[in-house]
Length: 249
Figure 1: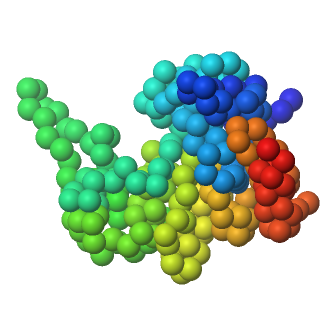
Figure 2: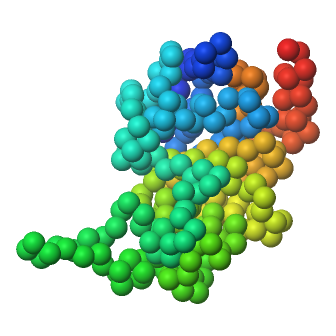
């Protein structure tokens, strides 16, 4: 029996006359890092938005842990353990680190008719969670706006790990990062895998994802044009395949 955490079959999606996805099959196994590659307009974001419930497919089926699902919103997929970290990271710049970490999931204590946020407990958790992914937190009250791009990515990944993600989706996690920060983010991704989390790494940069991926899936103009184990291909082969697929249309 195939041990897929997620499986998508014959996914189709159109926006007016534009056919964004043309019957795409896609899966991720447990504890696997899959690189989802393709140029702008390839259909990567549309496929993921269907997976998490942001869009509804025109046709096709989605299975999570072997059970057919029909997510109506990202909140529903999140409840089952699918965490998505978009390029904007869903972080609020003017809020402190600990507030961003628990955004929408604050620890509330209630006694009778009274309730309050347990700030001290949340701050301790943030420090420990960030240490777990190799980031030493200077001050949990630090405003996120003053953190580097790599540190912000670490916050999002640590948050997903802490809240028990089973599948972590990263949208261009290394975009606009320095070489040093990219290396650190890749280490965080490998740490997530060590903890048993499956990862979808969306990117157009083959050299970044190639370092950590187990498998590479290529999309071009709404079609899957390749699905390879990393050990069987080189970065140049992947780039040539995508270029050839784009050139025949």
